[in-house]
Image (tube, rainbow, N blue to C red; front, side):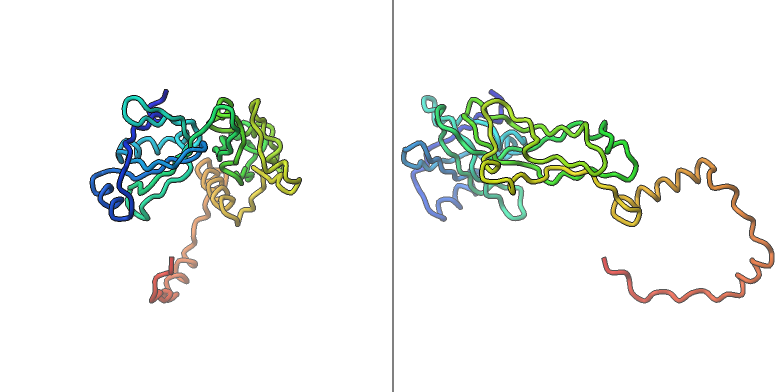
Length: 246
């Protein structure tokens, strides 16, 4: 198993906010394990290894192995993570027991592939927007993928990829699609950006600068003496008294 998929834990006897604060001061994370028709179990985890594991995208969409002591192991999925509002600190975690024979629902990330090679990706002024970054799927634990791949290689200007267009691995479904056609939402769309819009302005400025470097703008006209004299008589503009608001 990958390093991030194994979690060492200890059973926690004390409960309450005061006990949780004491654990956090000791570099621990209070956690809870529930599900599987069994009683919930309060746990304690070491903070730093969990913080490191949580930097891996697959940590949130994979089957994890929870080890309590040397002889107790349980396969689980991560259901919730509470983080400190501004410190790099995990405050609490929820885990759910899983059964090999029971379908589970889990949100997993979308990976977009083929964008640069697509007709839209090779067209100047066209941007492919990603409208979803994750989607909830249903599958048995053995069929659970770490991510879904969205193929954008055939996208052209004005095209869109819908949720139902995603190729699903065997044994995987997207439950929302069974509710109704209105849940078949756009996942990605290729749109043309005007020069005065967002990246369109930046692209136009970049193209203009490149043209000047290559000498495509022609020679710069020489300012005559009369124009210089007229410019010298003009009074300088007033300086702004306030800085532009950001």
